[in-house]
Length: 274
Length: 274
Image 1 (cartoon, rainbow over the protein chains, first blue to last red):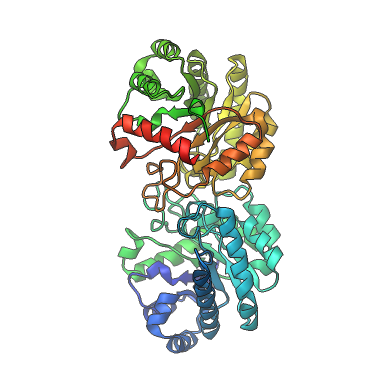
Image 2 (tube, rainbow over the protein chains, first blue to last red):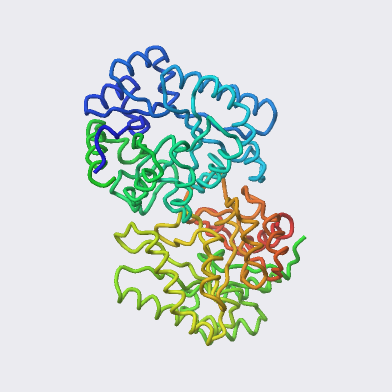
């Protein structure tokens, strides 16, 4: 049975209901010790004030969401992405995040060259890695489900993420999200390959049947078909001992509920089904 | 430039507009020489009458859609699926189809055991293969996009399909559908691994950005992000010299148009972008 002290909540889970201040206070009120922060919410609050509040509540920041989005149609677009990623690294360091999560980006506009987009991702990560290492801020590639390959992330499997880590070296790891990866027949093997050092996060939610929206219909743990406990076992067998971070985008359900009910349900389901 | 004589149309592309008779006559009127047939439309028409019409129009039947759906929650459910697959094999043989397409099925009801579902698929195919071999009817596993892993098909990559073919032997092959597989970084290698003998079909359409429905929003070739010509090159390099079968589920667009316009557009796009 997972312990409450292992539970973190990604503030996207209460994004429509709570500001960053409200999320920090709300999660802390329920005894949750970890939070993943989104940049838009951080910008509303201001980095200095956020850092103070996180410290006041002894909150561990499991990650800042997000950097990435490297592929672009032209040089200025690529440069703008790199500049933005360096700012994200600095913000992640300023709030003491355990990592900067990278949603790497999909195809540049009007492109059909997914191999080319993947090369742009590799080159983009390579370009910001020195800055990340200088800031002592690990970068966590989050492989996204293949249904996002065109428009959000062309890194879609743990195998690809592991290959990038092999190629680019220290300072780079992987965020393992069960929603994106549960279907992959190679998952157990690739989690073992990643090992303790590379696994920088473990994100949980559930895959609903039916899924009514490709982006905003993720389920609460236990309401779908993912064997979360099994995948947790694999990451723990690999040596991972960090937080279990609930991240639920749910426009028609959880985003419409009382946020205290949402947090309470996260805690209960984490205990009973994860 | 692909030739018209290589073009087939899966009748799902005009499923809301045309019966099987109308589809055969309509495709033939436009000079299309190949058709993939669906079982519900075949049942409406009757196998004997369909076989006669197909013969009268010298139509090649690139496949019968579909067998599969092997995983079930109990023994009677599994047996019913096997019986249904044997009937599908007989019907495919009666209309002279080049293969029976298998959409293998997802998780049984209330299950979270995807590895178990995959074992059920292997066992189900093994159970019907003798009947298929006796009928001289190749079975074509169609790996579906991972977004269908829970509810339609837990075989989601060419690698899995190749592994099944390795294990189960003669009479089994693969239908390569660009919609399901375009994102896979391993695709080129796995198509080469499959080779001429295993590639029993090549299905084309396009991935739209955004995709508004997970099932019924496929795009016409050229309207999305898939580099179809590149993937066609890979299957041809592997020795495939069969039809290019257009299969478009499109509730809000192509299924609402004049079917002659749909067929005309398939022909034009096949010539210009595939």
